Image (cartoon, rainbow, N blue to C red):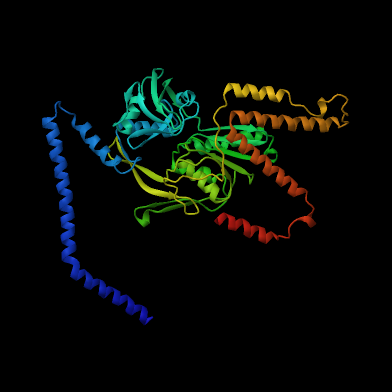
Length: 471
């Protein structure tokens, strides 16, 4: 005990000595630092006054100051910005689920406007805008040199009015134009469908309605499929989901996890770090899951993907995600304006920061480009000439029962439906096939006699599952 006390006292004494010796230089540095800040603020004031007095036209003071604030924020990173009264109101409207425009989430990269993702069933999506596109012009006017807010403002306009945007796309040798009509964007945050025996949940954004709508759509789809026992698994489609509210990402992750960490955030100060854990309860009731992602899956959708991937709760299929691993906090600064400031990075349960790296899928599956019409026609012609035993003259018949024949026809129809889906959406069809394969493997495992199963105790199985969760 005495050794600990001495070590403590020694530390205090050494600290006091260093403080005494360095107090003068430190105070001088602090004074010098404050002086430098005051000098820069004085410089700003001088420039501001020079602009007001000498600019060719009388500028508006408020616009100048807001532009200066926005410039200060946007110099930090692409996601920090000043929200004027109009922009602040627009942001609040978007998180509630409806707004006007083209239906694209954009960011700025090296001064150019880049599409993060088009929103489902909007003018941009229907016109063919893709994640990763660069928008260079709006109605023939260049966006180069504009702030992101200024570029977005140029894309806004009366509902029904036409707009032409010029697109620069990787793989295309020349820029090209897309023309569309502006519309009121009403977000359908979650849509469900049943493919074969798989439930597909398409989540397009994370706003105030996402979790509640997800739960309602999941329940509806399970009922349509004939109950949870008939469901082979769930596909959570997060492709082109640009993100949204952190609390909704946490709720959606928690919906499919029984325990464990979902996400953590780490800010500038240690006390600003936060961690969220899952509570018991799995809406999918332990059924297999596949998460679909692509380059338009960003932020909140990456939080969900990372949590389900790290806990081995889902197989992630598709293409690498966008890689936005930072958290923005909206801070009101007046009654009608605010700043959006990057305040933390977020980390997946295994401690990964995916900032600028993205999440790699477990199975890389690219969405193929649509086949030319000539190739489609050739494929249909070749398939029409395929032959089987049943086509041969004099082939033996089959005395299979009507019940068995009906089951075989049903299974064949499901296979054909998946094949048709592959033409429409290859990645989704791949996910459905994975769930079908997992269900078949589970069925076969159930049929193996107990004596033939590997000698693994219940305790060993639980330990293995826990080890995987910690992965």
